[in-house]
Length: 209
Image (cartoon, rainbow, N blue to C red; front, side, top):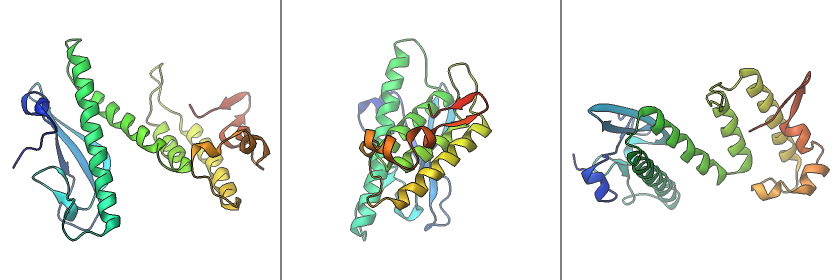
């Protein structure tokens, strides 16, 4: 199998490969896994990116960009490739940073980079889609004190998001970007920002961090 390299760094140091979780059902979306070997230890991490096996090029570890593809498919596959490239560059940067400290990449650090890249991607999406993604990841997140998100708080966030989605359906112009969350929206909407993203339970106020 050929090795695809973004630059000379991959040829010499950090080798990153991307494989599919399954290839038998070529029309079914499947997860893209990042595979690498560090200090003779094989590491596999799910990138949270998905693609149908029929569109995957196993020689370049990227989606096909030519052939019998309609415009919509080309744009979607191009976007997946761009996200993979962004992830690779982020891992190179992290690897360089760790090298200055005499350390190496680990499965947990790679997972952290994957999450950060996903969050950056979500910020470019529809705000409600972005917020929903953040809430879904909340329970898996770990704060500065090493504590994981609380399930009941996650439920509270989803309740608030549900209200926001209901309100969005009633708007003449749907929410399309974070710029729509201006002062007029926050204080004149039937469900204010305080009521939408915050819920009081007793003396505790929950906020999306």
